Structure formats: C-alpha cells, structure tokens
Length: 348
Length: 158
Image (tube, rainbow over all chains, first blue to last red):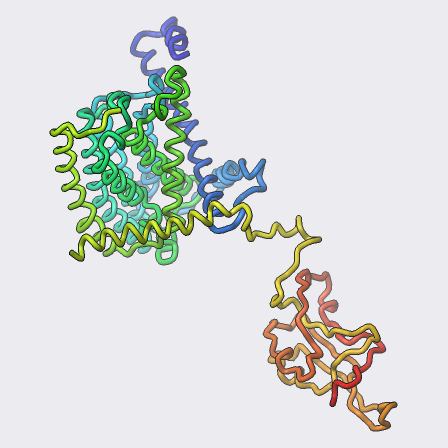
C-alpha cells in the first residue's frame, strides 16, 4: 500500500516533495491513531481502576462505555482556556506542546511489525531515552510559568524524580544493549529471533526488567511515584492552572508515555512483534497484534502498580533510586557483561 | 546485611500487595458493590443501619408504643419533633393518663442524628430504610407519625 501511494505521489511531484509529503502523511496517521489510542488507554485505566476497587466504571456512554473518553475529549475541546494573572504567557502556552510532542515523537521508532516502523534509526534506544526525558522540560515550564506555588513544587519534584530515574532507565536498557550489541530497534528484534532477551539474558535480564519497570513508572510520573501530581497535597501539581485542551494534552501525554515505556520494554525484553515460539511466523502482519498485546499486558502491570501501592515520600523516592536501584543496576551491568563474555546466554 | 534483607523484604511486601489487589481484580465481576440506582429501583434494598427517616411502627390493630413521654422531643437538638398530647381517661383502668394526639416530625429539619431513637424508652420510633425523600413542596416534609385513630399498645407502660 505504501508503495502505491509512493508511486502516485511521484507521478506529479519531485523526489524531495514526495518524501516530505510522505513524512507528513505518516505523521498525521500516527497522530490520529495515537490520539485515539491514548483516549482508549484513559478508558482502560478507568475501567481497570474500577475493577480493582470493586466498582463498575464508566459503562453508560456507548457500548460498555466505549465512547466515554471521546465525549470527555469533546467536552475538553469546548472548554474555555483559562490562565492565572501574571503568568508567563509564552512559556505557559508552550509547555503542553513540549510534553505532547516529545511523547508523540518517541512513537515513531517502534517496530510494530517487520515492515511497519516509521523511522528505523541506528541509535533507536538512545533516541527513545533522549526524547522521553525532554518531556520533563514541558512539566518544569508548566510549573514555573503558572505563577502558582503548588505547580512549582510539583514541577520541581518532577525534575528531581525524572533526573534520578532517567539514570536507572538508561542503565537497565544499557544492560540489554550489552546483549544485543546494537542500538537499532530492528536489529534488537532480529537478535531476539533466538529467544526473547529476557530469556536469553536470564537472571540479569530479569533484574534489569524489574528495575526498568520501577524506573519507567517513576519516569511517567504515575502512582506510586506521582508526587508530581499528588492530588492530596498539591491540587493537581504542575497542571493545576491548565484547563481545556491544554490540560488534555498533559493528560494524554501521560498515557502515551505509559504506552511508550511499555512499548520500549516490549521491544527490548519481550521480542517486540515476534510471536511466542514463532507460532505465527508465516503471517507477518500479526506482529501488530503481538506487539500491542505484550504492550497492553505491561500497561496493565503499570496500572496494577498504581492501584496497589501508596505514594512514596520524596526522600523515600531518592533513597530507592540512589541507594538501591543504581548500585544494583551497576552490579547488574557487570554481571551481564560477564555472562555475554563467557557465552552463558540461553539460545533457543 | 540490613541492606540485602531490605531489598528482599521490599520485593516480598510488594508482591504480597499485588497479589491482594490481583485477587480483588479477578473477582471483581462477582463482588461488584456498585448499585446502578435508577435501573434497579425496584430491587434495591438499603442496608440495615441506614438512616432514612424516623417512623413509628404500628401493629395490625393500629396500635403504637408511644406513651407521650416527650423524651424524644427534649432529646432532639433542633426541634424536629413536636408532640401534641392530652390527658384522657383510660377506659380499662378508669384513670386519667397522658396520651399523644399527634406526634409531629419535621423531616426537613431533621439531621438524622438518631438521638430521639436512642432516647425513646419504649422503642416507639425507629429508623426507616427509605431514601427517596424528595418532594415538590416543603409542607410535605412535616409528617404526623402516629396514624389517625391509633392508640397505645397494651402493656407498654408497665
């Protein structure tokens, strides 16, 4: 299908114009798909939360509440955009775009199937880590420019948290890079044809996965690491002063970030679009199904965390990172290096 | 070694917590406590200790247990209860006795504190479980609890 569109565009445009048009088209498609996917993640979160608390959850708008978040989005679109007095208007308006754009940019590199990967660069993992930490600038800007104490406290906490946990995310992924020997996502998937990396790397891979999930949850500012938003103490944290669609951008970005963290874990630990034991190897397009399935399981795991654990204090958060996760992570890298060096990996 | 046992304990307690919520999640279909109210209006039963409004139960002979002692009226902190009483001759014993004429209850003033029910020595008034108390006119909220023509049950005063 992409080929026929390419041919059709080439028939009346120059080479450069064609490639630009194609980029724009792909960006639009991704934007549309993931805006809707983000909305459905919100719905999933609400239903799952309800089930954890023995409630039913939204089930009135559309069949089983399927249109609930659509209606919410329409409501948010039609709401007035308010702001505070003496807020830094330029930065205040810029902040949501930082957050949402960094979230959407990260989506472009994921290998959904062998063919369906918008942007296969050779520094894929590095790009993902870099992009996912740009989002915090948006949060800091939002908190700073709102002219609100709670927002500022929330934003500063976010800074502390993201800078600390970024390290763990990077190092736990680095552990797996030792095994693959490449940062390119398509090659990481290629390596996993002999068994997913969590199987290949056995003990250190499992430790790395656990650290990655903890740090990833902290990175997305979700409970139990949601001191950034901490409803009970800070109102809504950095987005207290945002309303309407700007608030919706922050909200959507949080859920897309959750998807991204899970998708990175899927790609690096669970073999991306590869089916378990190669049962659907002959049907390549089923890769999307496997990729999304694995990602949703991990998303569910993060929701499970959220509705189980109480929120950490700031000092506990920093203790966890600097005294526990980081040393374990460094030891784990050495362990993984030894395992790769001595050829102790499990190859199926 | 406190460091490593901390890590071990941490992981153990996290897993314990997750197994608890996980079990709740798996059984959420059966155990749902949400009442989808207007839909199940016919079958919805309020729980035993729910405080809907104060009522005075009557038996099949139209007899209640209220002696007109006015303890409830005194106990009520905001004057929701007014008792209009009279002294009448009891036909059996021939003595003059205090009897209620009207036990007036202002639902609109009531804070559902339950002090009147605790104060009642003869258990003449109890909580009802009804919950649809909205009306279109304030005057409907003033209720006479004893039914017309009702009288005191025998043997309550002894």
